[in-house]
Image (cartoon, rainbow, N blue to C red):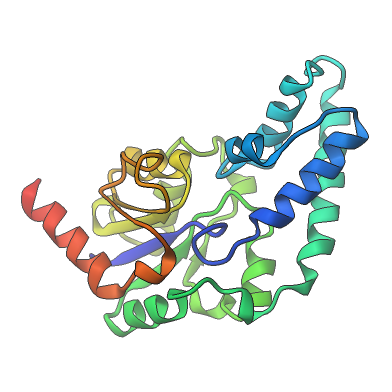
Length: 223
């Protein structure tokens, strides 16, 4: 194992509540009602794909031009960015600082593989930006999760083969992307939702450098 690629939302910090509030406000403005259950479908996918899902729910996919959709997505993002200005290192999820320190101590390189275009800004708010060796820019990718492109790009940017990397995700689409990239996948959250992951832990506090290394080693030995 040479590197670990992290998702952001639900793994390093929890910005899901801000995404939900911003999408809910935008949806209400255009006459579409969404709830927390529907919001689960938006986790791990790109901003434009999230907007398309909301418009489909409201049977309004054809009501807006591509230019209009881009403006709506930008409006949501502006609202979201205003909300996350209040984030601090206190918003790092339990166990993540120790996980990062442990991985660094073992000589691992770290990458961020998040669909969020606000990843660099959020890491800066959390005081973690300099901790990551590479941050994949999702705006430069052709396909979002569950396509493996973001994880393949992250591995390439870090200078390693996919099979030398572990990916950590909290969304099913993200786990699918890690698996398709040929990496060992660790899911954080519901075991049934993330059943395709190599292993699943219930929360970030259950993660450790030793666990990540052990899962990778056992997977490689049995492959």
